[in-house]
Image (cartoon, rainbow, N blue to C red; front, top):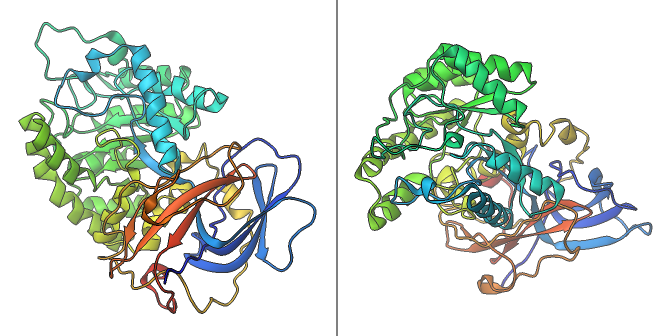
Amino acid sequence: MRFVTAAVLAGVMCAASATAAATYVRAGRLVDVVAGTVLADQLITIDKGRIVSIAPYSTAPTDGAVTDWSRYMVLPGLIDMHVHLADYETSNNVAEPLLHSAAETVLVGALNARKTLNAGFTTVHNVGNYRAYIDIALRDAINAGTVAGPRMNTVGAYLTAPGGGGEVTGLAPDVVVPADMRVGVVTDANDMGIKARNLFQHGADSLKFIATGAVLAIGAEPGQLELTEAEMRAGVAEAVRANSYATAHAHGAEGVKAAIRSVVRSVEHASLIDDEGIALAKAKGVWLVMDIYDGDYIEAVGTRDGWPADYLRKNRETTDIQRMQFTKAVRAGVRMAYGTDAGVYPHGDNAKQFAYMVRYGMTPMAAIQSATVNAAAAPSVGGIWPRQSLSKVVLPTPKPPATTIFTGIGPAAAFRSSRRCMRGNKGSRGGDRPPRLRSGGRGRCYCTWMYSGTGHRRKIASRVVGGLSFFAFVNCFQPVNWTGSRLMSR
């Protein structure tokens, strides 16, 4: 017999157009990702696009519409801290970025944005594109309601050394790369300041340094430092002047440590981070955004489709050690945020990384928190998802219910496998009925299947209520006592 239960996660809110009157959601289960617990039978009050209160449900309010989600468990829109929406996906052609005009690229970006939103990710940190400013144009179109997509924090262009990991490389020597693909190329600390200032003047929200070589770039080695500490410090200084921050792509151990000493707020990839780097990240409060799903995708699809041998070699040299160091960082208590490097793999498959994060050391709840409350609090999205909005919600602490949807979930079993089946919407458009979920994942929702240790499956879908995004977990197995569940422990 299938048991279906539900809960709504509160505390993470999307800005939306004001509603005329308060609206309400009755939640059968509510995931409090701040506390890492599940609350039973709650009433969420939404006013002017904000959650204003959460309290145990007693009677239905009469002064506004009530959405009955008493059968559902719901999460907020998810956050991916490392995507590349405004570009073409990685292929076997190193010249792929040169084959498309800026107009084509921004249209593809709009498609990628919709795929990401439909995958349940309603906020992203877009950390670079080859053509400068395409991401800024896409962000502005989304904010204006011209196209559908997640809220974007943008960097405008990569800040990279000449011929480095942020350049289009592998071309014949006489091929001229367009100027709009070299906007962020820097030659020294002074040039870094000039180029960083230019990006902010053109609307960038934050900066992205390519501190080391890249896996998916010809002639660049992941362990090789490409930007000096002085250059990165000059960029950070410009970010501070703009009331912003910088993040750094860094695979190599020395690059990671140089970036941290340069006072970046987060380090992307950190594939070859060593124990000293892990300790330094923890001591400085720097966030690690480790894309530990990509390696398997690159190996499978890159080998099948004939990606450059240089790409595949570097991927094999970094995949296993990155996952090992991810486990060490989790155990050490380093701040970890969810980021996937979408664009290396197809946009819309962002949720596949959850399985890997649990496999390599996180609890299922910690993995969810990395893409919700932790990512919301992380500096890299601070400007688009204010931390203060989290603290305004007073969460009740009722006695835990006798049953829960989570059965036998452990670090090595939960999120073992996933495939697309999630749907998201961050804005005020959309229906206020519960998601229509059918066995087998049919219907109009997209789902992510997440397998428990016994092979039971859950589906996820979302719906917008009162301008806020929620996700519903629908569980297809018998309830058991949840006290002590690994999902609920850290």
